[in-house]
Amino acid sequence: MNKMIVANLAYRPVRSIISIVAVGVEVTLIILIVGLALGMLNDSKQRTQGIGADVMVRPPGTSILTGFSGAPMPIQIADLLRKQPHVVAVSPVVAQITASGSLEAINGIDLDSFQKIGGPLEYLEGGPFQGPDSAIVDDYYAEANKVQVGSTMDTLNHKFTVTGIIPHGRGARRYIPITTMQDLTGSQNKASIFYVKLDDPKNADAVSEQFKTILSGYNIVSMQQFLSLMSADNIPGLSTFIKIVIGISVIVGFIVIFQSMYTAVMERTREIGILKSLGASKLYIVRVILRETLLLAIAGIVFGIIISVVARAGIKGRWPTLPVQITWFWTISAAIIAVVGAMLGAIYPAFKAAQKDPVDALAYE
Image 1 (cartoon, rainbow, N blue to C red):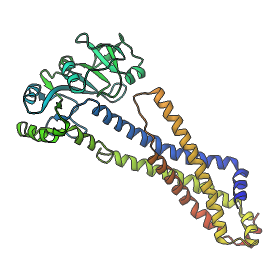
Image 2: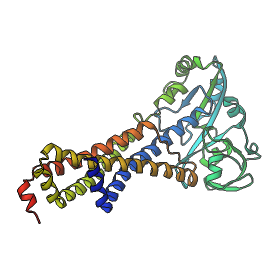
Image 3: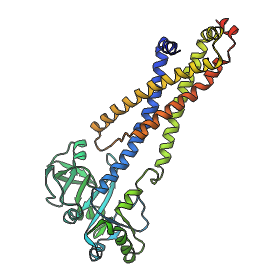
Image 4: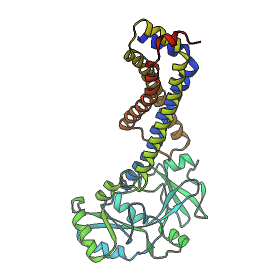
């Protein structure tokens, strides 16, 4: 049976290749799009963790995705927080979302207090701010935008000179002095968020509760709790987006495999009649069709995984700031989804082939 199945697929190479490519596209769609969504989420999570804070203080009414643009909080809150027990350092940050090129948060920081939170910045090139029009960028941003120390970049309709390049993973990809950010955004003496460093991270929950008593209504959360909320299930719309991608992928695989196997059954009417006249049962005919489909699906899965890995390397080379996370879970999930979609598309053609009358099939022209 296996030799016959392989021969049948090789006899119609164009149709077989089209089916394999279609299943491959289905797998690639799931792996890449889901991988891009999860990659960006986890990258943001890792960069937030890399700041080194133990507690975050944000404005009232903010959620996991809000409160990072604009500066509604008085910067004097930092002085109040520094007086609390277990507090080692407080760093105010003004964050501004920009959509120039890509959606990105630019942070205005007080460099001294920011380094007290997570330690001194490590410079791959250059050094700290040299004035109000200085900027520090990470290596991913520098690579993606062909930026080096001494380069001029236009940010928030203002010219900045890059004075330092740091490794990625330390908060934002671009930093400017906090006073400059406040002037550009009209938020003098204001902040978007306060990062707090404690003498012991184990005190984060207790200190958060203490902060809530002196800053009623403010969104105060430990960094550990905040990071635990940064998942696909907690991001509004992300899980729905993933389900839509999977649904579209299943439909693509189903339609292509259904069309391919249905046409194959129609073209092989005489072949099916010969098999049945030689004693092949209905179950045997169904198994032949389903095995052909399974072989096409497996070939398509392998093709899709290869294309996904190559595409990820291409994306990383062209857009370093767009991480694509390919995991075993989603690779296996994509494979299972592709097989299910393909088998669903082959069920009707398989049973239609099994129902053919051998006499009519042999007489078919």
